[in-house]
Amino acid sequence: MSLRNQNWREVVKALSKLGFILKRQSGSHIILEHRDGRWTVVSRHDKIKLGTMKSIIEDIGITVEDFLKLI
Image (cartoon, rainbow, N blue to C red; front, side):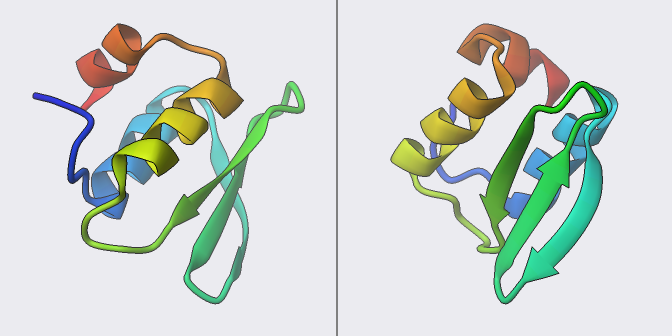
């Protein structure tokens, strides 16, 4: 499994396993927040671009390998 072409549903599911909850949605962007203050934005697209995925992982503060284990 790689970071390329991840579905937004799978990304949101993986983030919820880490304790992130839906804060709000603005158009095609889902804002998820953790109770410790971390937050990130997930584009609601069937295939999320690689650069966007890297930004999401950087926002939540885990490694790529740890994220891939959640999916």
